[in-house]
Image (cartoon, rainbow, N blue to C red; front, side, top):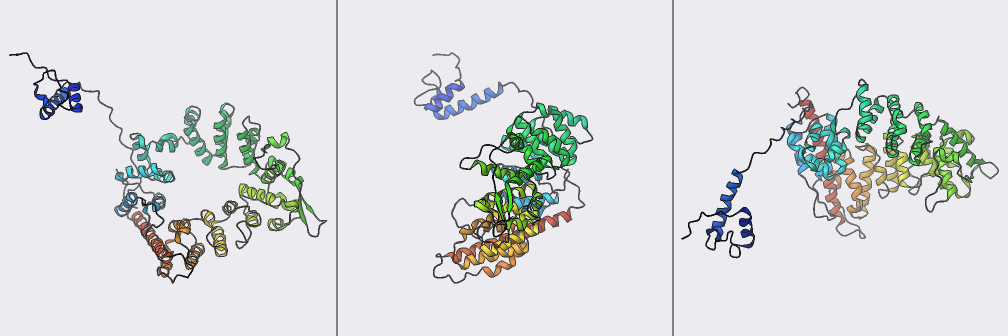
Length: 547
């Protein structure tokens, strides 16, 4: 009889036996060992687990986490917090079909809810932070609003979860407080030693408070900066751009980077009183003249014959894009950079409307008007934008000077908010919704009453014509987010399906009824959401923030 002490199987023996099966592999050399049976094998594994754990040496204690910073903002009260949880819990319909049903798309209301909550200055309930960050991870358009709402807690959590690291990348300086003008030592140290994102954030913050101090800080290290960094830093001068920036920008025209030179020239051309703008006015004026010898005054264009070194220094790109003539390419850049205020004096004291209405010889109309459009957008000149837009009832997608709907949308952005909405309402009344989507995107939210009425009326006309509603799904989606909630009552009369015309798409009336039901429900829900936040603000006005 063998009385030798039994050697317990090793962990690897047990693992191999479990993988291969006890019929094929016994965990020890002994043929009659009890672990040949599955139950005994599990018993041996349990015993070996205890033995292994008992033999472990304690690891080094991890450093204790720093507590999350205190958020001084008032906490979101219960009704609004419940609404947020519902919005975050909603998921888009995975079916992917064209029919959405009559229920509101709650996730599409989340951006609007966040904007309102941020305007009221509330802090989020801590338990909603993971879902907020997950939503922002999935949708980049939500990130600015989510990070503003989540505050410093988002950054604290992002350092603990790699899935949320975007918060650290999105927030320059990763939440570190930027030094103010009263801390010149910290400003200088961060500017010279900070990471690129921190330096960009510092320059932008300083520029917003003291444009001259920001420019001086940039000029101190300008010669030693990398070209790609110089381009980003130069772009920050758009904030508070003024005549005092001109000497620095003139120096940047000689930069070794073509992109930096082009940006400097663009900024200088946005200063109508700059020396570069004057040079461009002379060049552009030499290319466009008024011919009085024809039956009616006519603009004649003589494009530049060459792009000389002085033009290149002032930001004119010599090489034309593929398919574009060089001379027309140079002409467009000169006219775009010339101050618009110079043209009335050059063209007989005419107003922008009168200048735009002049005939242009030799098919130069499109090129000349498109350049004036770009100049109006760059110089934020509302008078020229109105002239180039023309009346909203003008035929076609383009006005007297615009070459596309995209051009019109840019021109509209230079107009006051109410005027912009009125123009788009007139455009929809004249042309319907098929070409209006881009134009609606530049209108302030919620839409002004005339614009909202124009959109609803146009949708009703499309329904009566027998079209399917998903042909207008983009506009319908905008309406759900942008119509004033007070318009909901006007939709009640549209909920009854009308008699379908003979040439209507089969079943279109029912689909439209469903779409209008969803629109009305969404508007009423938005009204409730806004009321919850307003009530919450009054309720918490005297309450302290969360501990």
